[in-house]
Image (cartoon, rainbow, N blue to C red; front, top):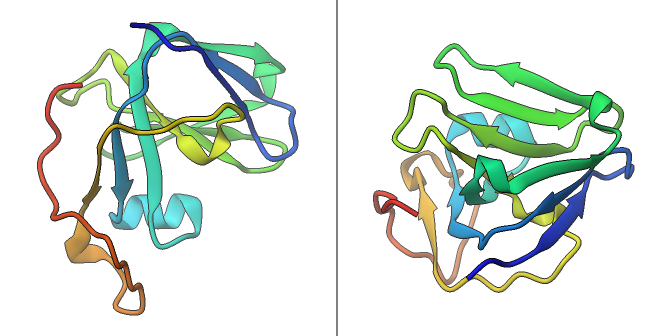
Length: 137
């Protein structure tokens, strides 16, 4: 079953549409996500890349490719982190969307925390789930 979602960056220069069910909701505590978001963790859900369409001002979308080939996309105007993908990873045709940028309601069926070993000592999570490997979405 397909779902339709839309979202945007902080300043609204970039808007996007998704025509697929969001899967694999993960709160990632890795250092890369912490640095990219300036937060204790980043929350993403994944969709097939072909289901994501930039619907406004895509020319402001910027790309940062890490040394491992992971591609992070963000707004060049306001800096909002929006998407990441790994063309060399287990799911090369999928893209992960920062769920806090969604403008539509989204209720995950399940969620998980990953890279808990690099979470900050000052972070207290009351309802954490043990880190697990992601299953294929």
